[in-house]
Length: 102
View 1 (cartoon, rainbow, N blue to C red):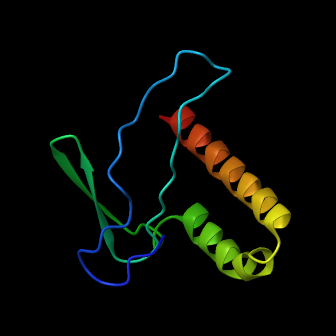
View 2: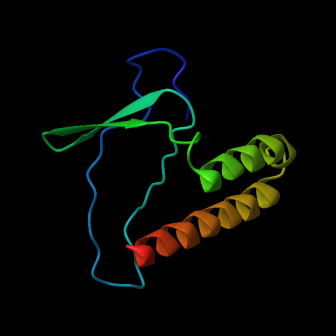
């Protein structure tokens, strides 16, 4: 999803539900701000997220890979889903690596 103008809503309002059954995980989202900024509303709290590519080698590399690959996979649903799986796995591994370093 891409905002084409300032103040435009990108994500529909929804409620997150935790799921205690590991066989039926709840929905998860991953949002990446590659340019500009993004305001997130979490209940009554607002959080502003700015693009962080300039000082983050992982995100800069991921953006380059996304820019290079996105047009190649859009016409093929199977290739697109496999690409998304790889992309999510890379982000999950990086998030885990960063959390372990804390």
